[in-house]
Length: 461
Image 1 (cartoon, rainbow, N blue to C red):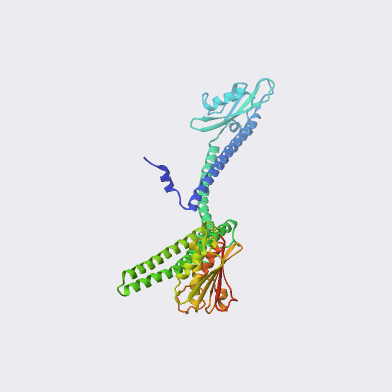
Image 2 (image 1 turned 90 degrees about the vertical axis):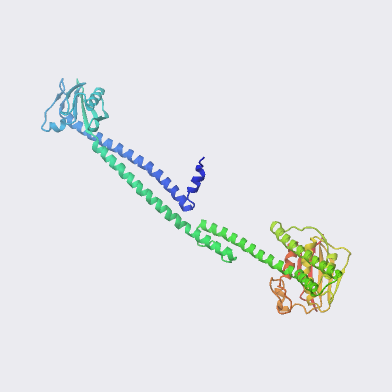
């Protein structure tokens, strides 16, 4: 069974220029057909009026040769009566007085002349003379005292019909030329009009691939292209934001996963160095399992945060008792055996309105930096303030250089890239971003000395 619609859909032009050109051609063809029909109808009417005027003039000339003043109608002889008698019938009432020499009694023109004379009024008719083409006849009554006379004149319409046919053929040729010109000009005009759109599309494709800062703007553009440019600019901004978030998420995952991966590698290297006892193997497996769980938590936390920020940036899931989280994080620090750590709290339980995994991700970079740079001690104090839980992370290290304070929370910036550790400068920016995502804040106190003090503010649970 055939399916015409899919076939027609496949045959339909795929470009806008290819679709607009047939539409314009169809509209032009319809308009030209109407104009051609109207023009030829008007011309036929005009040619018929010309023929009728010619017949009336000839009838007026013949009337000068007909005497209706006496009791009988008489036809006067004149010098040029042969020219006047051609295609002329003269009647006295219904009685035929004179007819053309070539006319026969039963011919269509003669019969039409008899019918017109019988009406005794001005009237016209068109008949088809066999072998001669169409003939136009008009009857003209003449005034008389007793017997009404009528002059019927005839005119061969073949030259007029020939002129009408010539006009029809000429108009059809002109229509064909106009339609061809319309099609070509439509394609050229549409192609020229769409050229900026094609250029803007190519530019948008190139700019979106690399997250470029280039934009189209709306100046010096037509209104339609200005709206298109504004839409493309908004789309490019969103694409650039998505790319930036993607790069940021990739960097944060790499930064956060580096520590547990390092622990796994170190444990495996230590275990492989020499044969281990069952207890040592179990301890190594426990450390690796803990690091693996930490990696899974990190991935889940960052991905959930990115997803929730995309759907509902103001969402605050769950509550957390921050004291156990602080104790657990301090026990897992790399330098826990070299740096003394302490948690100082005013209450046994401090509830923050943030999920536990997110609290860990916010505090982990701060505690890791404090343990890395501290000389001997890291102190963490937590307390409740109106509407929030505030956590201070203090170390007795060298502190942050004054010239680097403004760049401290910028991604990828480090005060001393040659300080001996492989950080990427993403921990503090990540901590601040996650805290702000849940309505909190991470700040640095430049006036604290010696060492550094970072303050984390989280909404109260």
